[in-house]
Every structure is written in structure tokens, then in C-alpha cells.
Length: 170
Image (cartoon, rainbow, N blue to C red; front, side, top):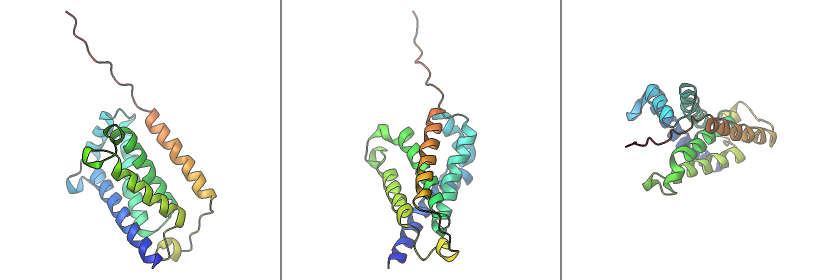
């Protein structure tokens, strides 16, 4: 039953992230596509916007795909965590907790799910298990956590300073 539960969790979370990534990369399901997502990065003042658009979009698309497959699960979880943390910091945190107001509730749920999967693994119904891929623990999680923190810090630190409000002179 544990393997089935983990499979369901991986499919749900991985499918959601695959969908979000596909919106950003391909414009599927009403998404912006890569050009629109690059413009969103520009509006968020992240520099260089094209590079960060590619990193975030493929982090979600690739992370979601790997999570569904249960392949290189710690890497999938790290990619998803980085994307969710940047989204929280740049978009959702100022809007409060509740998703109904645009808050970070949903992103935090995703973070909780992938943290659990990173800690317990993808389960027996996964390519990691079938291919006997076992990354060293806890070293892998420690290194990936540090990489996520550094990546998020670099992304947030790359932001162009906000323009000063224009004032009219009489």
C-alpha cells in the first residue's frame, strides 16, 4: 500500500508541475508559452529574463516528468522546490496565505509534498527502484538543499532594482 500511496502522490504532484511547466514552455492549456513567460520574468525584474524563464519552466516541466516516473527523485524534488520558493517570494507572499487571495497556500502544499517524497523516496513503483538508483543519503539531500537555497538566492539577487516612482514637477 505504501508504494501505491507514493505513486498516487507522485502522479498528482508531478502531473500538476508538468502541467505548469507545459504552460510556460509550450503555451498549453492557456499558458503563456516561453515568450510570455520570459515577459513575466521581465515584469518580475529577474535578470537575465530569458535564462531564468528557461530554468524555471524546464524545472517545472522536467521536475514534474521525473517525479511522475519516479526517476532521479531527489533532483526532481529540488527543481520543484526551487521553482515554488521563487514563486512564493516574488508573487504569492505579499498576498498572504490563502490561495483565494493569490497567496502561497498552494505552493506551500507542493513544497510539503515534495519534501516528503525527497525524504522517503519514490517507492517501489518507480524507475528509481526498477533501475536500482539509490543516491547516497543524507549527503544527496544536504547538497541539493544547499543548491536550492543558493539558486533561489541567485535568482532573487539578480533582480533589477525597482524604478523610483516618477514625480511630477510643477
